[in-house]
Every structure is written in structure tokens, then in C-alpha cells.
Amino acid sequence: MKSSIWKFTKRGLLLLLILLTIFIINLLWFKPFSINHFYTKIFVEFAMKSPQMVAGMGSKLWHYDQLDDNSQQANDESLELLKKDYAMFKRYDRDDYSGQDLISYDVLDDFLRGQMEDIQYENYGYSQSQKGGNYMGIISFMKNIHKIEDQSDAEDYISRLSQIGTSFDNTLIQVKIEQDNGVIPPDFIIKKMLVNMHNIRDPDLQDNEFVKDFMAKVDKLEEIDLQTKTKLQQDMKKQMLEVVQPAYDRMIAFYEDLLTKADSNAGVWKFPNGDEYYQHQIKASTTTNYTAEYLHNLGLREVDRIVAEIKTLLKEQGYETELNPIGKILNDMSKDPRFLYDDSDEGRQQVIADYQTIIDEIDAKMPEYFAILPKGKVEVKPVPKYKEKTAAGGYYESPSMDGSRPGRFYANLYDLSATPKFAMNTLAYHEAIPGHHFQLAIQNELEGLPMFRSFMGSTSYIEGWALYAERLAWEAGFEQDPFTNIGRLQAELLRAVRLVVDTGIHHKKWTREQAIKYMSETTGFADSDVESEIERYIVWPGQALAYKVGMIKILELREKAQNELGDKFDIRQFHKAVLENGSLPLTMLEQQIDAYIEKTLTKA
Image (cartoon, rainbow, N blue to C red; front, side, top):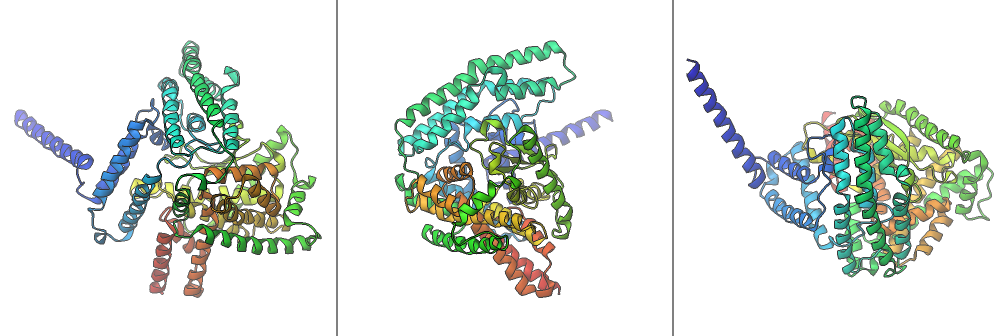
């Protein structure tokens, strides 16, 4: 009897194994049986090619000892896979889907189509800049993503360090291809990059960011003895001396040579087919077909409107607004001692504490405005010192999907004169609550949807929402102090100015100095901020256009919902309709708001 049962069990297991094998083969090499399986296939392919992405999700299950393969061969293979996947995707009939299935179809279609359109510009843009790239990203990854919870994790950390030389060499191969295509950063950008590289490379070994991070993490391990810790630290330093530091030396030498070949022209108009590339960037960032000329003029109109509102508030506070440019008045305000922190360690600690208080206070009121709230919290951290000189005033980092890492708002403490108190609320609302943290954390927490929906993002939606969040905070009763309200309007003015200077640089051939002068005179921001902002637009063409375009669209959709729903309009449900599907292209967002309006009217 037992023999018969075992034979039956073996046959059942064999059948299950055969069916599983057929499923996996079908999933990975043929058109999957269902589109949901195809979504799984896409995600599995991305994950298999990116151990760093998997680690960013909070998982150690996939090559935790490996960096991503960024070789030219791997890039070529990814490109061919993209073409095959898109062709396979189009074999699914869109008419077969509805509801969230249809949204998923359209989101992936938009993403893959955009990736296909990117192919013709794959060697355009700057893969390395003063704002980021492999030479900076690897530190952020090791410090913020690679957890060390046991000896094996520490050994994996060392293994990843051993691969940095190959990774950097592959990066330089890509940069050389860009160079051969006439894509060379301006000389002033390369100089900033070299400063960043030296800031990472030059400190003594014990002060190196990698070493300090590794030592701190290993020191916390209680289950391993001192001898083992010492051995791990020695192995780590060996990789630093033999692999990591020489890799940075090669990177520095390359860019020192490239500096001799660079010019000072700021815009991508200087690239072969630069105008077409810029229009492509506009479409990719804003998900619209707006032209550079249209956006430039839109920016000028918005600047005039916002400046008029600021002048009204300044006059009420006794400022003379007719004799002095608005930028000068705002700049003088930012230097007023009553709005500044002490330039000291204590002052910097107070900035972090005050940001956390601002965030916690508004978080408590948000249930009145949102029918959907993120589970994860947000904490404030200082921007790491190695990049604070060229980083923005603040930025946000999403929480891990497993909840082990909260959302983080990084505040730049390099130049405290660039952090006047009247501007802090708006920055916190933009980067944290109800801005990026609400939108991105909610997106990460979506359930029952294909995994890619948690990762893909439209810049115009993401940044448009964050800028909308600044205004929402004011509407919710925050920023009522006239100076804090001026800070809000100054921040919105910045986004309007971005429309002008981004198109000015890349379409109208403005110089770096022209753009800095216009932004400084118009916004009144600290010189260090203005310089950093303008140089950001130079290396990320079109990205800065997305903020105002996205905000305007969300406000237009809210006004449309209010007009059509009347007393049935509920701000909580409107925000739910905006956020519950994750990041969408603006055209798709409009479709979802139309559906929300129709559904609400039907219920009535």
C-alpha cells in the first residue's frame, strides 16, 4: 500500500515539476499565457539584471554580493530584450482589459514606447555629472541600501567593493561613446565633478565614506567576535587600497583629460541634432507635446503673476517694492538675522529638529484631506557631506518596500544662509508631507497590482504633485504667517523661472551666466542655490519643466471636478483618485479624474 502511495506521490510531483517547468519556459522565452504573467516576466527580467534594484526593495535574495552589470554587452543585451518584450507586449489586445488591468496595460505601454523612443538618443545626455552618476551613486547605494546584519552581509559588502573598478571602467566606456557623439559636459560642470571625485577619493582611509560606513555597520554586529571583525575590516581596507581608490584615480584622470576638450556652451543645442533631442526630453519629462517656445512664454506669464502676489504681501509688511527688484528684496530678507540659524553644529542640529516638527505637525492634519494615507513614516536626515556642496536644498528618498527603512527627507546644511526659516515649511511639504512622501510611499504600498506599477514614474506627475502639495498645505491653513507664505510663493516662483531658464539654456542658447543672472534677480535665492540649480538644468535638460506643467494640470483637474460635481466634490476623494493608481502620465491622470467624476455623478 505504501509503495502505491509513493508511486502516486512521485507521479504527482513529477507532473507538478513538468507543469512548473513548462510555465517557467513559457514565462521567460515565449508569450506568457496571460498578460499578468507577462508583467511578472518583465519584472523578473529587470530584477535578474539588477541586484542593486532588488537590494533597494529590501531583499537579499538575489546576488547580494554583486553590483549591476553595466558593461556594453549587458547594455546591448538589455536593448535587444526591450525590443523583443515590446513586440511581445503588443500581441496582447488592449480591448480585452478594463479597470486596473487596463491602467496597467496603458502604463506599461507608455513606458515601453518611451523606452523605444529613447533608443535613438541612447548616447545623448550626461551619464556622469556633478549631480550624480556611478562615482556618486555607488556610495549612496552602499551606505543607504546595503545592510550589514551578519558576517555574510559584511563579506558581500567587500565583494561589491571588489567590483567597483570594473564598474567604473565600464562607465568610462559609455562616457567615451558619448564623447565620440559630440556629447561632452561644459568645462564648468567637469570642474565640479572633479571636486566631487576628489572629495570622495582624497580623505585619509579612516575618513573615507566607504570605510566609515563599513566600520560603523560591522561594529554593531554583536554575534561575531573581535578577531572576525578585525579580519573583515582588514579585507575591506585591502579592497579600498587595491580596487576602489585606483578606480577613482582612473576616473579623475579621465575627466582631467576631458576638461581640456570641453567648451563653456551650456545647452544641448550644441549636440548633433540637439534641438530634436531637447524636444524629446520635453515630451519625456512633461508627457505633453508642448514646444520649448510655448513653455518659455508660459514661464514668463507665470513669473509675472507670482511676482505680483509677492509684491502685495511685501507691501503689507512695509517693504518698498517699486524701487528695488523683487529678487533683491527676497535676497535681503534671506540674510535677515531673524530668519537665520547659527552657523554651527548646534544650528544645524536645530534645522533638522525644526524640519521634523514641521513634518509631524502637518502629518497630524492630513486625514482631513486624504482618504488614503501612507503606512510608512518619514524622517529628516542631513545631506551627506561628500555631496552637500553640489546637492539641492533638499531631496527625498522613498521607504523600502518591506518597511524596514522609512522615507527620508535630506536637508542640505552646507550653507545655512541658503536655509532661511521662512522657506523651510514649503520645502518640507514638497519633499515629505504631503508631497513626495505621500505620493511615493502610497505608490510603494499598492496591493494587487503588477510590481512595475510600484516603480515606474512620470516626472510631471511626481513633481507636479509635490508642487501642488505646497499649495495644498497653504490651503489647509499652514504657511499663514505672511513671511512663510512669501516663502511658498518664492518656491512656486522658482518653478515658473525654471520654465524660462531651462528653455532659455537649451532652446534660446542662453549662457550659464545669463541664466544665473535671470534666476538670481527674479527669485532672490542664495547665490549657492542659484548656481546649483542652473547647473542642474544644464545636465538634466527638460526635467525642471515637469514641476509647473504637472502642478497646473492637477489644479486644472481639481477645478474641473469642483465645477462638475458642485457640492458633491470631496477633496479627500479627489486626492484618492489622483494617488490611488500610482504615478501616471498626465493624459492618463486626466482619464482617471474623468472616470472619478463620472462615477461620483452616477452614485448621486
